Image (cartoon, protein in one colour):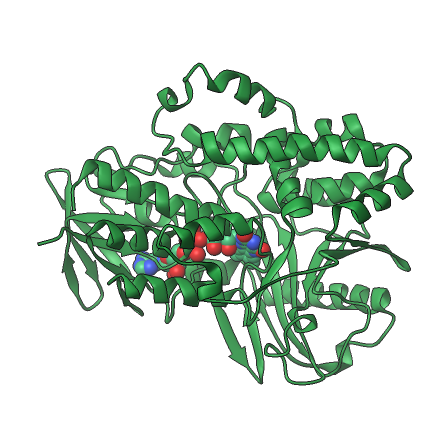
Length: 491
Ligand SMILES: Cc1cc2nc3c(=O)[nH]c(=O)nc-3n(C[C@H](O)[C@H](O)[C@H](O)COP(=O)(O)OP(=O)(O)OC[C@H]3O[C@@H](n4cnc5c(N)ncnc54)[C@H](O)[C@@H]3O)c2cc1C
């Protein structure tokens, strides 16, 4: 008889972990509170529009290839990927927009046109970012980060120095470039990672390598196609999924979890993997004596932003939009301050518009546009209908001005999603969208551990533990935990 594993939650990390464990020979069941798989990467269809509810940027295609490759599959066995070119459009001011080309030669020309000598520096910057990406992936990202000993191998010291853990992204970028637009292009991925460029180790310029060199891709049909592919693969390997099955309690005896209780059922188990939000499992699902962290620990964590999102259907085409559009028309510094330093509702937020109907005619009715508008905002803010309406009006007006055409009167469907929804749909601590911020003091061994030290068969996976937030790290998180389980408890 194989050991029985219960995985709580069917986000990327939970499905990834379940799939590896099934391959290793465990008997795996995934319990998911919502009606379908995907977690933050859910999807829904309304009035002919199909909305991805969370992630929209498909970066690091190599990680997806590696993931499916471990099961002798390819992403193309499950979905069709297209590389976007241009990768995205940035709106700086009205009538001042810039397209970021997919080809590096064109990108160099663009940089050179903005700042003399910057093409050469871009090359230098990307070489260093490529090194960080490759070494980071090979030597650091795949570690369980249970102990500092994993990182004390003498051969890693020169690598760690080159990874620039103690230099900030802002300092690194400013040392090479003076042009403000270039700085924004290079610093923006970090904002979405959850901290100010001045507080984020330059290690994370590996994200620029992912952005500018590896490219922005799109799975036809939407990001949810990845989830569908992963669920198919997991089921092929024998993983069972049970939906609308919210875990309410883990029964523990002699430091061992033995039963999972939901509203209507109990499940016996040999191993538990918590893929739901870490704080929720620790503070609500297990007894106090078994928690590794208390509320004050959690309260001191720096959370990545939450998001105020609008899913919108427009009954016409909008000429000026590309698939991905970033609106950097207001102060980065002020907005950063309002998210991270003095958290409050922002006066004039930067925002992002995804318009997948530009590359995919299945996500909106013919002649219409599918919009996903995201405003990064601080977690733990009071989320009211009045605030949501206020930002809808502000952002839609700015969108109309930038696009030079009426949009509001063409909206035939709209729905908002923010803190309250993150909490009720995903049990997200403080309504966070992307987990913990990627600061140095919250990296690797300083993150909440993948292993509960007081319960010998309880493990954690997902964006609140190693390696961190984002779809590719969540896939890797599932793999790291499955490997640790295989090492510690035989199937
Ligand atoms: C708006 C938004 C935009 C994003 N954009 C991008 C992007 O463009 N690119 C990118 O790479 N990343 C992006 N991210 C980040 C990425 O989506 C996440 O890091 C990743 O999906 C997290 O996966 P996870 O498995 O850790 O958690 P989740 O997806 O949250 O999965 C956890 C699951 O656990 C379930 N659960 C919770 N409590 C229980 C319970 N008691 N019982 C049973 N089940 C439970 C939840 O319902 C959920 O399904 C975005 C995230 C958001 C929110």
